[in-house]
Length: 344
Image (cartoon, rainbow, N blue to C red; front, side):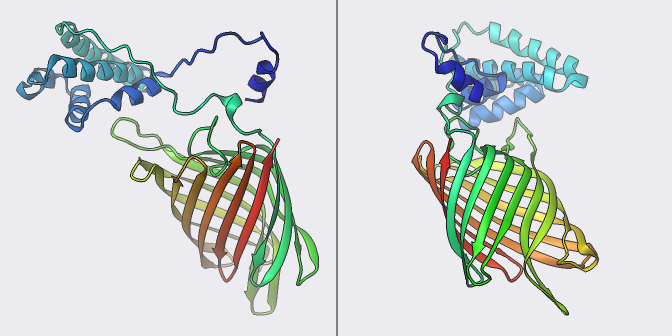
């Protein structure tokens, strides 16, 4: 997207802009025009083409049958590529659908397929710098942070896919008043997440991967570590469902593995697994909220379990300026953070 912005900067270099939707985008947009009954027929005819002759399906008005069959054909063409081992099966089904469609003397609707997000150059800039303040277990702090690239799930959405995240090269420096200590609070080498909604036609998995360092609080017999550096690798996978009850929401659940290396732990490490459930919601054009709850059990290294909870909100002031509030809790450690982010 930075390359697109550079090209767009020179007058006359970019001519007409044409949106070319993928087949999946076409299917999802055209599917939005179908009723609940028609969606059920869409699923049925793509799985069993003998249903094309079903009396109840034939009763549908020709225009509505045509709409169902047009989407069905697009979907079956998509499956011939996406599921290569069964390509012949899907191709045979598509021929049956096209044969039924040709018997309907109805012209297909030539509606434009609208994009699910705006063009990349309209989004926020990919680098980010921020200032923050807050309190952690009664200890006030100030923070400055920088991120090289390029987007997280709470950043402003225009130009980016809802539920996508890729952060590379992020660093946070924090000063704690009570300890009079300046320390590296977080270092992100790589943090990626993809929340892909599962529906009756597309079974897209959701996943995440984080490699970096954070700060933990650990207290046990003979050890009191209020702010300890902790190397962390976290990987997970699961599923998400999408709704539009309020405006745009994504509910997700993932099974994950978590490995840590720190002087705060017995044997200087702990390894375990657990799961996360959460919700990402676009409340308004400018306001987004994410809530997560995580439980992890660590049977290797320092044994134990941990529950984590988080509520995060972002409000967009301008395309490249946003304010964020976070409330995070993990194992006797709670913090509230108010941040101002600028993108450049």
